[in-house]
Length: 376
Image 1 (tube, helix red, strand yellow):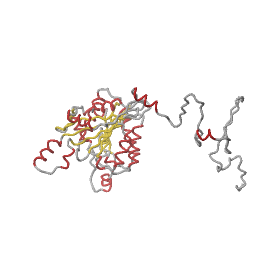
Image 2 (cartoon, helix red, strand yellow):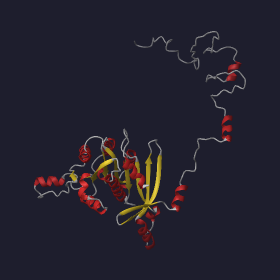
Image 3 (tube, one colour):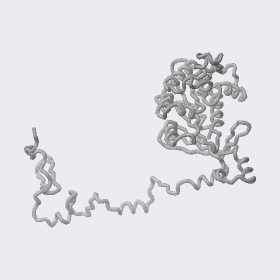
Image 4 (cartoon, helix red, strand yellow):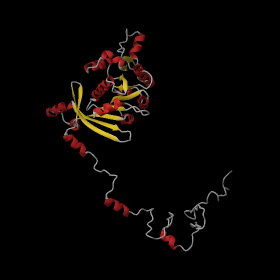
């Protein structure tokens, strides 16, 4: 399943469509969203280096970790950091996100500002300004791939940090503008869902074409009392969990998939669900399902239904119900009522429109209204 996510990000955007977007959400019950983020980051980076991805570069917006952390991460995963500046750029929103350290330097309170910005990283001093943040990301991407139709990928390690300083609408505008940019191939980010209101999570899910979430392996473990047996169970299951992903298809359909994961030495591994979990998932499927095909008995039963607007002739002359009187009442009437009778000339080759009033109390037509009561 994670391969499907990485493949969608690797393949990128089609001509005239927005770039695929992935939201990775976690909570304090299972705080492994960042492990999923680094897994997707390294997988996509290897595809970029192999030339198998639509994007030819990656812009990483570092909000929760320093640029040096990601450099070390790439080293541990076997990437050549010396040549990384050719395919990755880091926007450092971690060192001085609000520009406070820069102001201390200007006031002389500190001798210098330690910045991790280097050939791979650029320093951002105001994460509140979404327009400037968008411009910085696009400029770094164009610095990697140049102008034209060559695309790059955008990764935001923790979008929850941006929500601390900006409104929902401005952050949603930033993400939407990145998705709709002609040079952005794909975009993905992580968030702590339990830190936000439900509307924030709903907005991120609406913007995303894929939503992935991590949950604890045993949901009922949160309510267990702290004894030695339960603590042992919690310790064994803490580094394990369930990984759910929801894919939005272009035709409007939604596909949901699940896997198990376990974290070992800061590396997350995914395995298919066990047979017991599969049976549980199947039992949770809705029991009521519909089919577009009808059986022979269903077709016979449907033919027996008399619709209120359908006239069953049975060899008799067709009489159209006008909506006011029943057919039986119209037969018993000796003379036409004052409201009007449907009269036709069989020899006439022209058509006519005859209006039947609902009752005698109905107000006159507009053509008959003398408009004496109007102040014209």
